[in-house]
Image (cartoon, rainbow over all chains, first blue to last red; front, side):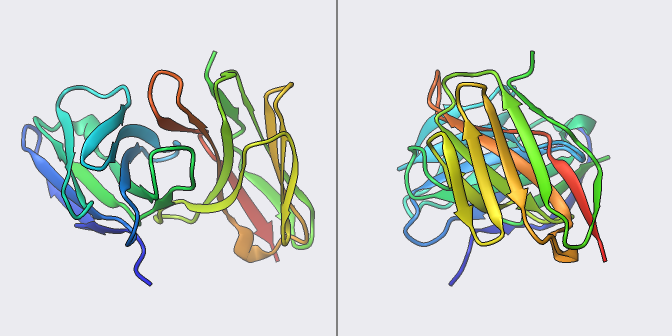
Length: 113
Length: 112
């Protein structure tokens, strides 16, 4: 019974570079959300996608973008990386976009140097 | 005023104690109320989920919601060292956009 899978688990990037993070939701789940969690803080909402369409967006700059594929997997892209982008990036999977339980993956730890 | 306030702790209790974790919120549009547990360097894990005022019990965990006071609580009975983690309150809203909003988390340590 596969849960939410994220890749890679860790990566190190240099300032100004671009990064792509990937997420595969639980089978049958059609919604994926992305969160940024800085050490010592709660997760901050970045995006929610449902049926390949963006359904929610948090207060993040345009350097952050995402998309959802026909198989409901998703990618989060961050351009022009800043040191402050260093964080744990979490993907959450849910059945639909409505108020329903979200199940999180283990996250991708991004370090920008 | 922040939308969600949660005491970051750390909170240390002896094994077997009853633990009370709390969050206050200011946004009346919050519709659903959740508690997540997060172990170090892991993703959050859903513990409890409710949408109405009152109590909801699941094993050693009880979630309490008071919408009139904009206050939610999580009680852990007979706490165990394995309960040592960060506990995050979370809220779901469709006001403006669909999104979850999390508290900063309370670090709990249960001492054997």
